[in-house]
Image 1 (cartoon, one colour):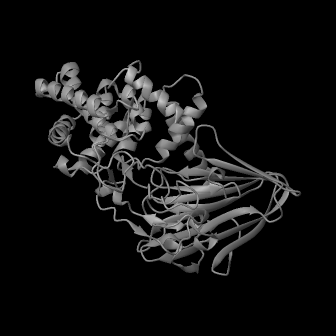
Image 2 (cartoon, rainbow, N blue to C red):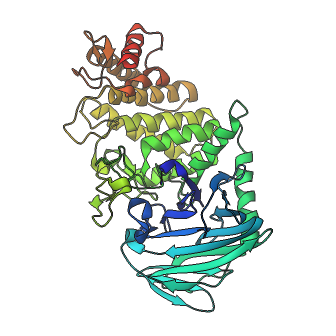
Length: 487
């Protein structure tokens, strides 16, 4: 299916993609970065999925979220009548649950559920056993149990159920992950958990302080960002998935189930400006743990809990979305040096301070170490914001963000009375500014370019006025903007 025909459900531990055809084609358990048990989006249904849909042809289908929640409702219209499929993941459970409720709207509709579990990214066929408790599927450390209101049976290494639902009727399915060496968890009540899940998300959405235009769209975006946050650690995922292509049929297919410091700071800006300060505090604590003792070892990207080793490998058994291969897990960008990240982290922590978020003294100690590193390394070339897999360059955007790092340190002393060698930092700030204006601006093109001496344009230099490096009215920036627009 088209990517835009998927909806996102999650529980702040992991998440799933649900197609408008009623099929869950992506799910990693028990966390965002865990191996997928449904990977059909990167291959075929043989790589794992769970489809619930009418048996007879669907005349129309649409899906939408319940107001201010991550509860997804898909409505199917058939000749027999209409049904609603309600999908969600309870965020407060001790285990990872996917709950699917089929609700009759009109008429009596014949339905089918087809569950294909394939652990290890669609590779491993589990050992399946039926008992009074439900249907269990086990492979290595992972176990899933399916509890359903209707009988199930096995066919061609999949689990099926065929049933009908009339107007006002409900049939529930609950799929629960648990460690295979532990006893299976107690069943949950789907009706009760639906109410709890709805309350959880609506209570969170109600804390949004934004009251401007397009509030529904803003809240929906915030809910998505919250859903991509690993609640128990504070780590913020860049995406739910791996290897969805930048270009159909292309090879730039990367694993984004990680916490990029840059992406996380952008997310924090949005959350903090909408009134969500707890998430900012949790992420700051996460950062302290991830960076540990030596800022020279700061990575641009970590795992959800701050893991450093993100070894990149290719999964050759998966064809890739729309045959866009290779499919990768892990990310070698974790080994790159990207100078701009230091500026983004300093800017985010400065914003938190300005918003009155209670900052642990350890945060400023960490920032002092980051500044020391920038002072010693701002003249070194890097891979830049686009994670270029080629020679390091003196990227203009990277130097601008090094300036931001020093600028926010100066302002921390000036505005909040924190300790630091402010005179030294002021001089360094000016030195970086002078060099960027002298070497980052191409006099013949009349534009700031991608890296020193290059004629290539780069949208990242348009961050200059947004971070306060130059005013948007500066003639050099105006000519840069005009050239970017034109070319």
